[in-house]
Length: 99
Image (cartoon, rainbow, N blue to C red; front, side, top):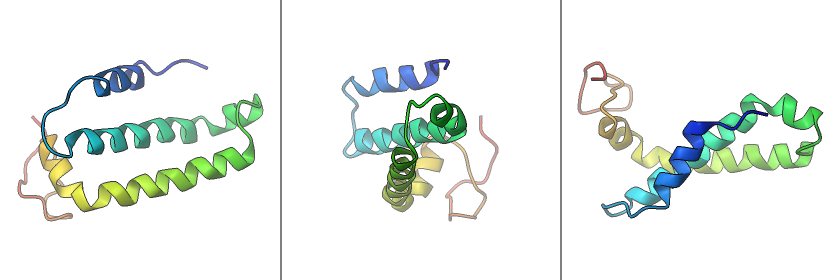
C-alpha cells in the first residue's frame, strides 16, 4: 500500500499552532474525513490483506458519518474559506470558480 503524501502533510500541519477559534478542530475533522475516504477508497485492499477486519471497516464508516455531521454546520464557511463555491446550493456567500 502506498502512503498518501497529502495525508502525511495534512497531519504534519495539524501538529503546528493554527490561529482562529475552532479552526484547528474543523481542520482535524476534515483530515479525518480525508483519511477515512482513503480507507474507503482502498477498502478491498485493506480487507484482502487482513490489515483491517469487516467490523473495523464498519466502525470506520460510522466514524466517517460522525465527522460529516460535525462538519455539516460549518459547510458553507468551509467552502467559502477554501474559495470554492456551490453557487447557492449550500447558501454560499460567493458564486465563482476557485482561484
